Amino acid sequence: MFNTLNEKLQSVFKKMRGEARITEDNIKEAIRQVKMAMLEADVNYKVVKKFISGVQEKALGEEVLKSLSADQVFIKIVNDELTSILGGEDPSASKITLSSTPPTIIMLVGLQGSGKTTTAGKLAKHFQKNDKRVLMVADDIYRPAAIDQLEVLGKQLGVDVYSDKDNKNAVDIAQKSYEYAKKSAKDIVIIDTAGRLHVNNELMDELFNIKKAVSPDEILFVADAMTGQDAVNVATKFNNDLDISGVILTKLDGDARGGAALSIREVTGKPLKYVGVGEKLDAFEPFYPDRMASRILG
Ligand code: GDP
Image 1: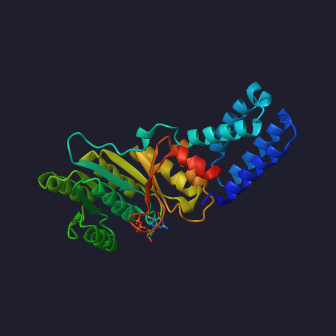
Image 2: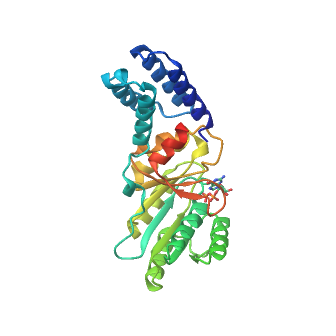
Image 3: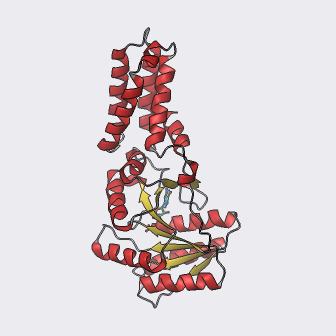
């Protein structure tokens, strides 16, 4: 992901370095090309607009034009604006808030196939490494295969899984799993909820009722980065209905253009907390806006 965007931005910077003199005109041209590169990478147009106006404001200032290394200053400005739309430099924003009275409840929501169940396993492994006692809850009552999938992951990791195939009430399962977690002194409960191919009211009602019943500390929207702008639209819908606390972006190892990854934070206003970079359980990283910006700029 981001290969094309990286190449395009590199060529803009290279051209700038080749200029005998940096003028307002060639900075304007460089900004125009950065804008094109962002749009081609499928970044949401509102995000591009905000990003470009930030770059413009700083890059057309006197200091840049007078500077001897105007190209370096320009790259820094682009880097800073990119970091800012990805969530800024506040490292606490990307952390999971652990409850002062355990267990901490994390509810994973998102469309079917976005990577919720895999992410439940990845998160469980992440917390297990930090010596936390984890419970995973199979709360996708519509797909027995999803329950099996979570149980397999639980066995693989040696993590407890709460499931009840005979219970057809997702809210009840969530409540009972919470009681079970308290009794068995778990630190973290990860609820894997049902997804659908498309957003619908029935699903949202169910998720809303689970939220009401167990008051999760975190509601993390799991988004498939490969689905481009659709991931951004669906995130907006989930955020409006459930007031999510953050986003986990999966399949960043894929070859999508990266626009969703660059837009979702700015559009929803909610932090990206982790990214999935492969199918394996350790292909999972905390999200750092500044590191991602540096990776994109190369
Ligand atoms: P769910 O329906 O939301 O629970 O999605 P799953 O966890 O079953 O994942 C759907 C597919 O995406 C599976 O084939 C996963 O292996 C795959 N997947 C999940 N996360 C990632 C990731 O970060 N990278 C890649 N390449 N594949 C992923």
